Image 1 (cartoon, rainbow, N blue to C red):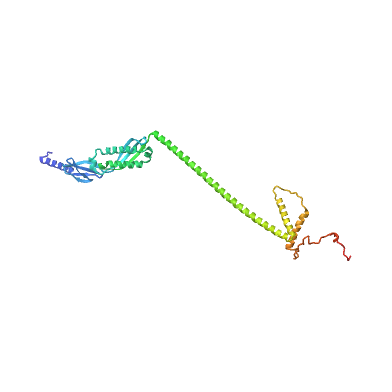
Image 2 (image 1 turned 90 degrees about the vertical axis):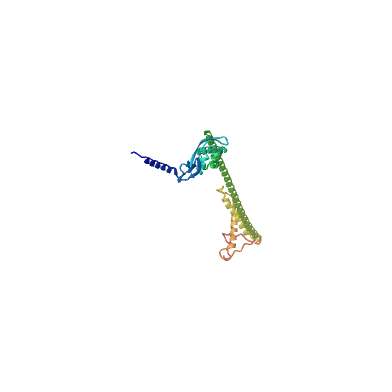
Length: 343
């Protein structure tokens, strides 16, 4: 196939049109921003979508990723405030907010952020003790985020988060910390045990005190009631003695017999109740017992009568009765009565 001069011209024109079209229209994907340079100088930033450039005058400068990105911070040795050597690594999250500044204010952006973060990790962690370093990671993260974000702000970068991933003390230091933790826990256990023993002793003492107080109050109440009972018994005995004394003063001898018989009987009852005596042998006068019983019977007849409805008059005292002598009244045998005059 032989091409003429016109055919070649047409082909060249088509190729130039295609090249012009590609140079004129630029498509920016989502999550990216392109910078535009005119004769090597930054002019504007292309946003995601279809954009038109001036052919042969403007060109794409830098293609910046504006999505949030993750940057790993390598492990490094850090000397703490108390001269302890630890290994620490971290992770940083950042986002490009100004593509032009990120493209033209700093070269090798990721390396710059990485080194800046490592330097600030040494500064922040080096100003803290080991114990504070291991227990305050949130404080470390907050301080790192504030310092690094302020440092990268002129580059059009926003650091959203800086996290310490791992802190590894030396092996001998970890062993010493383990022994220290064990000793601290044993100390705490001993303190708790001592406090429990002390509280138990206090509770026992309080219980014994309360029991003693209650026992003393009970004994006092019992003594009070016993004294009151003895007082009432003494009052009753005093009243009975007074009544007997009045009866004696009025010349009632039978009251004396009743009183003596009652006391005599009570004494016999108490002797019989003695736990150390099974058999009691004692001389008793039959006439005294009979006289006492006779006095009691006479008193009962005076009070209740002899059963015939008539009240028996008490016998006059011995001083008012005429004496019986052998010269005035002959002795009479009760089993042989004297004969009457009719016989």
